[in-house]
Length: 450
Image (cartoon, rainbow, N blue to C red; front, side):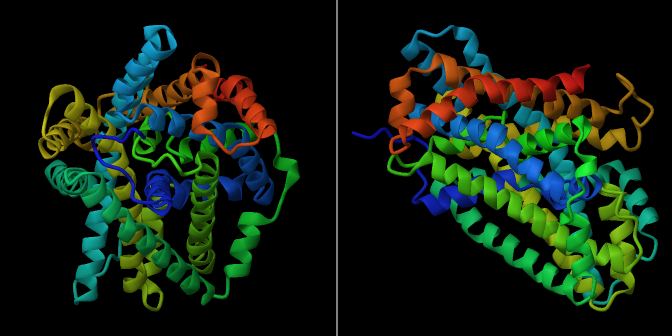
């Protein structure tokens, strides 16, 4: 009989694709990918990025999913079982611990930023009903960051919304949420692209993003593409391993993984076509990517453009949904672990993990105000947490996942989980997971620490 997860199962391939794409699509897709593409050769960057997806992202994504589906439990419990099954060293269990700890740390600051998207959605909702306009976005954003308990409040609301989904379980919580949120995200994004087309600058935006400049293909650009390919797919934090545990046996992992990777990239490109027509039309510096562009530059355009209030509400609503679907996947692995190993009820377990993330997130909240003077390794507290979790733990986790799958798991397990894959493709994937992907991820990791 087919093993099933005690936490529930995805009802279909579509449900898994929506959930996995929701995990992969985050705030970085909305601003970081378009910014990186435009600054690193446009179409040339996209081509290199797709190559990195093929050599790094997809092989490790497949590895995570198959580990999860074979174990059918939370990452740590799965790796305990697999090390016993294969006779591998117990040190491999650290993959699960690295992923869960990294996920908790990332969720701690990601929820704070998610709170920003809620705050701005609320501001534009009030504007739609006659509230004051954001005429000085820099001051508005600065005022938000200067008030720690307002930040902590939005952080708490965002975390509560995440708990509300995870606490209901796989079918009633995660699946129902992504079946609504992901189509809503896509429709909103398409509506924003359509609005951007009315500015008359969609062609310039497409050229800005896609016109290849191969003179910019260098080591730095390739490193940026590799890093984006790895981080964009939510690899190394065991979220895909956890979601893979709920994947029915008759669904092809390679085909499903490829769809997730392509959907993630497509949404990132659509985000560029939604943002850059506005950026170009209103003379905003397109090279000021990140929070500065989103929270202090784009609102200037929203304030003067026709329908700007509606556009602003849709845009920050889009950011909120992208952050929410990613946060759901970040909370799930640790929650599943508590349910399995400590016998905690799911609702209570999700609340316990969320409370821990909220408390750790206060370090990020205070790094903008009362602890702004605190610096470690020449970084503020949020930057330090990002460095440890995002830049070090994730590549390390991804590296170990590739090595464990390629060298420690039995070939019979791999062939069972990848049934239907041709012998030639299987051999190519296995050696990519064994050698090529680990070497490239190691380059990303060394680029950070050295």
